[in-house]
Image 1 (cartoon, one colour):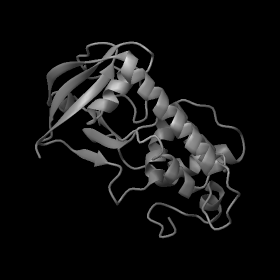
Image 2 (tube, one colour):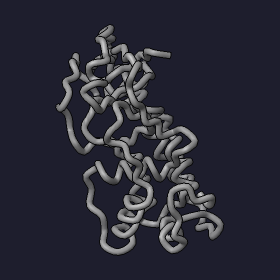
Image 3 (cartoon, helix red, strand yellow):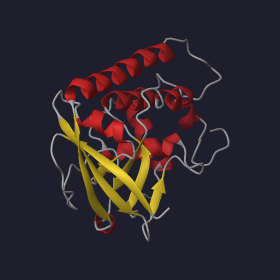
Length: 224
């Protein structure tokens, strides 16, 4: 498939410009989209206002794509990229050491790719990552938590070549009376289900971040 249709949810009609945007998003500076129209509409209305799902046709021919949900990658590769780009404070001691360990051992080479596809981490999802490096959430539970709200994959345009490969499509209105409620419901259910995950007792059979460090577990380790 040489082309895909992607959407960017916003309160505005957006013409993407290479080199603009926040540098501390999940995968760094880029243009963040989804292949799911309904999800784009939810994010367009996430501030309780009407918005738009801006549609684009992306020509993939000749573009390099890092797909973090493919089998050769694991959730710690995704987490390492998140930890490098998101702005947040880390407590002294284990959380700080854990962050450095994950960055040193699980950070893939990602900056040269034209496109990155992978999990989307809104604020509640980012709290799951924080809990993992604080040793209060197991690796198994982190994987499960990432699927709770079913945010799906995001498609991030990173390079100038990627920006030059999109064509604007339709501007699709999103009504806050419908999609803000959907956004809130998805977030609420994800938080409720996360509480259920974290309510069970500590399991000595599961891998926690301290086990990564003590066991010298690195990328490609069969214990993962």
